[in-house]
Image (cartoon, rainbow, N blue to C red; front, side, top):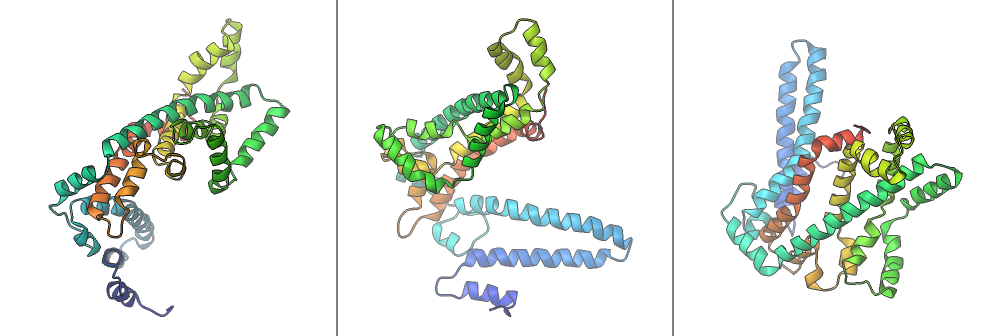
Length: 317
């Protein structure tokens, strides 16, 4: 097995009992791109060799990284326009079955209702988690003492516990509270994320303490300092944290699958997974559902892209 060539590997992918034509085509495209890159490298090594190699290495890395990132989106969009049989055959060009796939997707599951459920949960969780986690992060820095540091370390340690280990305790708790199959079971565990508390705490260290002291001298109360000074000055941090919270809520699948048991409560990831259920799923229809579920997260990220970068580097304005 270790002595196989890439050509033999592609041949095996194409002629096994269940051929993987799409994967074989993707590997072939990667090989073709590598050949083109190596040809360019060989051609450019005659003039200013060291500088060209250095620049070419950067371009090779960027090209390969861009291809790895963009190709799945291209394949997803192309597949949404093709029939299922064409997708399994590895077709990588646009087809004419887009409207048919859209119709099938909306006919087989209530995507609109699931979309509205996901939007409601994502907005509520994002707003509440930003408020609660920012208050916690602010308090850990401004009102720091030994006991709070111990509490913060315990909070960070909870991040190390795998989510799978929490599922059964969470299920028992919400079952005893009678909150299963309700949106409360999804919202409550998500509004106190340890990562966001840590994120706000680290960014609060860059907040000028002199501003708080001056506000106190001027007679502004603690709540006024937080809501009228801290929050406006930390808007970039809120934007970055908001993207994290929104994406985590929007893409949440495992816990809603367990906690939500009726179709009218299903979120969009659950609805899309239902499209893929069955012995022979319609991949074109599934890709339409995936595209619909991907669009909001892409829009949120691009709308808040600048603030996200500023928030990640701890910008305070």
